[in-house]
Image (cartoon, rainbow, N blue to C red):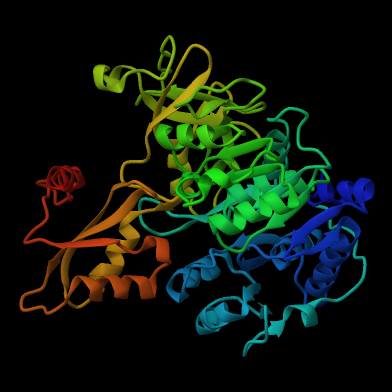
Length: 524
């Protein structure tokens, strides 16, 4: 294998007349799509952007995302996907750290880019959906022609997404051509008959997120299927698209399925065309799964993975069997195990899921670690973080997921808890430190701590506990608006509680478990 995009080239060769992208009633076949990616690759090359150069894509799920993604790969560059909910503060770090030379952004988002452009390596800004000051409109940027494919090595970086760490500073995850190709292959083979050329995939998971990028977009396009992107989640719109186009595949986060079953006309939806519904991003409540399957014909199959693993490592495959409450078995080509603090394997239980209330979890759980061709090359420019993230053992390079879980003798894995402080809200990962640092910048805030609290729809939601400065005059709504202005919408606190002091250890660390316990006791 050379370049990841050769997988798309093979699909073009075999399925050239098939629909590659269906969007707002228009269809683009594989040959047309390939021509568009070539025009984008030409445009990059004419501007001196090529091998190893970074191209940032700051878009929702629209066709130009797919064109820019695969066009960048054709030119030998690496993609830096950016959440379109991010604002100036957030993209400034991503662009500065990645040294991206080109940014493809929605026209409305271009001002966020130009505001930080002088502090970064960005040379060209491309606008999608209209003209914008300081940017070249997307169709004007393209240069028609067939540039071929720039050869890359298996371990060259293809995509560099960013994931927050416990320090609160997002880390660049270096995913290679082999990482992503191997995982797209694995995802394609987890359902009966694999992903087929006659499959139609709902593309509602964000493409900047590795789940939507690999498991949904690439696994579909690499097998000649049709991809139907939606720029934003809307339950009614998604269901209408499934019914109208007779879509066959859907992946989503738990909150999406919860939205579907809570629609007033949920019982009237016809989802019979779907042959697979996958769910990941966070654990799905068993009650949501049960209600979905009471209403509709397809079953829900839960999986697990991380940005650093391209992402999928475990899945409840229809082929291998399903166990409700489990994230499934390790996918083919990947190895995993549960280890204790000494990196000794923890014995599996006889059969799961176990009764957690009557079991001492410390006896059966440990950290889930994984190894395989899907595991990232490493964090960009962070040798200390890489040293912490990996353990070499018996000739294997094991990645520490930071997630606590257990396994059973049938090979199913169960995630008990996420990393110590990470909040998973609606499928998005949020680290409290990032929100806390912003709160500390407000003149009325003397001290602050952020924690996740239970939420029926999102799984968790964000709550901030704030100690104000003396004589401060600030309201909860004012602090919420401040956070919403400076952070992506899903990161801002839904609740803010003013407290006199925060519980701390003798070394000054906030005891967040006490805040969560207090929140739980007051909400009962």
